[in-house]
Structures are given as C-alpha cells and as structure tokens.
Length: 158
Length: 168
Image: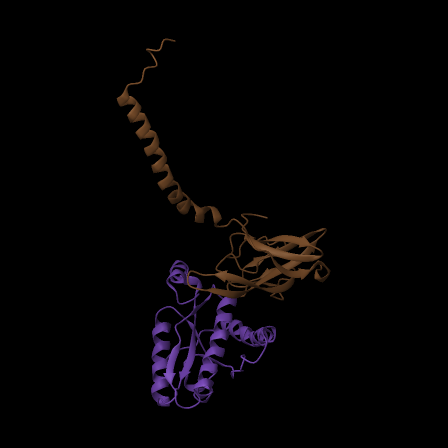
C-alpha cells in the first residue's frame, strides 16, 4: 500500500493483514556529487515501487527517510531507530529499509531490522526494455529476501 | 366547422406566438448545457484500448507470464504502467488472467509455491487459485482472479480491460 489517503482507507480496513513497513532511505547532497545522490534516490524509489506492487496487500510503503550526507552518522542512525520504534510500536512487526546508499551497510548491525542495500545503476543511458530487465532481475533477488523474512519471527526490539 | 369556433383573439395570438418563440429560445439555450453535462458520462468507458501482448504461437497449455505497458491517465498525470497477465491455451480458447490477488492486491505466481503445483500462489497471505482462476476455499481470497478481455487478430493476442467474476 502506498502513502496516499485512498490506500490508507484500504489499510484501516485490513490492518491485521499488513505487518510490514518499507522505508526508503534517500540521501541528499547539493555539494558533493549531487547527481550521484539523485541517482541513488531514483534507483531505490524504483525498487521500492516495484516491491510495493508485488506485495501490495502486506506491505506499507512509508514516506522516504531523507538525510543530508553530511549528517553525523550517529544522529542519522538515531533518527532512523526512532522511526523504526514508532512504526514497530504501532502495528508493523517487520520493517525493511531499502537504500542504494552504502553508508548504511557500515552500520547494518546497529539497525533494528532488515536492510536491503542495492548499489544504484545508472538507468538513464539504458534503453527502456533493458532497464526493465535489470529491475526485474533485481526483484528476483529482493522478493525472496522479504518472503524469507516473513517465515522468521519478527526481530525483537530493545 | 364554423368560422366562429376557430376565432383566435389578438391577445391569444400574441400569447401563443410569444410562448412558441420563447420556448425555442429557452430550448436553444439549455440544450448545449445538457449536452455538456451528459457528454463525459456518455464517453467514459465507451471504448477500451487493446494492447498487443503476445503471439498465439507463444502460448502453451501452461500459464505463462507476459508483461506489457499501458498508458494510465491519473487525475494528475499520464503515465506508462507495467501490467502482467498469465496467459494459456484452454483447448481452442485463450485465457488471460490478471495476476492481482483478489484478497488485497499482491501479485500471484503460477506454481509460486512448491507445495502447491498447478495453482496460482500469493506470497503475502498464502491465497491460492486453480488454473481457471477459481479461488481455493479456506484461503483468504473470496473471488476468482480477474480476466482480461481478449482479441486475437492475425495471430496476435490483444488484451483489453479487466473483467471481474463472482465465480468461474
């Protein structure tokens, strides 16, 4: 389900079936390599959209978690943990963070739930069918990660 | 008939004439309004666009997955969206099923679970459907998978709008 009022109604009617929140992690930087950051954001948004399409009935695609690349690692982590806590406490037992930004890989062990990090590819120079092919290949990797997660017990929070 | 009975007074004549002319004027003013009001209603859903998706030679008795693009006009913008259909041959007929689970809208896969061969499987809440699209009892979906409208021209399969079914 998406971050819209109409889908919110759908969520409220079938809450008990929706136990997974997807949070896109999107970096911002207008000084160092702005285009690279935009590309990361674009790529992870495409993946998140696609995950939502496949698992519409069980996942909720939250508004993106955005941060300046210059933000202190600890403060960024702290903010994400508080997002996680808020949504965990309010009905989501599984939370998946999807990003193309490698900085999260470094702090993966400190994250309360599952990180999916896919390095971004520049889709702008590819023709349409090839780009779609790439995305569907990536999906074949990502979707099983999430279905496998559903087989496991939800991660305990401190 | 005597002439007397047909007599129309000046006043009556004027009244009739004015009513007649007035009536035409009002009708002339109102009819475009009525047309403007009704036009969108008459147009909406009038025609569906068919999109070429596969050739008949591609099809087998096993449902296969075909992806295609559709232009969707949203309230705010027009966009190209991907759609998927599971298509197979059923004797001389061709069946094209929508992959959208009728429970909450996840995407189902043919033989998506090893435990349930010959069925469509929804990974979200384990809904299942027979090959015909019939939902399996005791799983969350309450109606069969939707069908696509099909047209075959010159060996090419075109898909149109979605048809909902209460039962197969």
